[in-house]
Length: 150
Image (cartoon, helix red, strand yellow):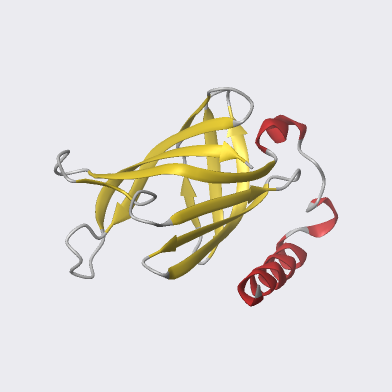
């Protein structure tokens, strides 16, 4: 519960600093994404070795994302007992490309492809990094997310 309050406070501060008057204005183009989503699969595959793949959800991890009508999102990954929070802005480019402009913890722009398999199921594919051999260095990987509306 405390982690959720801390995350909410961080979001409020970031939005008030970055946003201006339109920070909370609804973006009709992303209406289909608005709400709470939970990953039923989060498969990471090494970019160097396609045989090296892991589904973090099968290993007991969780991934949740909340998307607000303004496009602001909060994503939380819990992996190996550790929580990681990401804050940013979701934007659309065309009909099948979503842009995730991460603002926290470090600025980044990810452009995964998306596929709606109905109003309550979303698939995202994109580039990421993951430490497959647990040596402390993340390697390039492909991420495959299956998200269910909650």
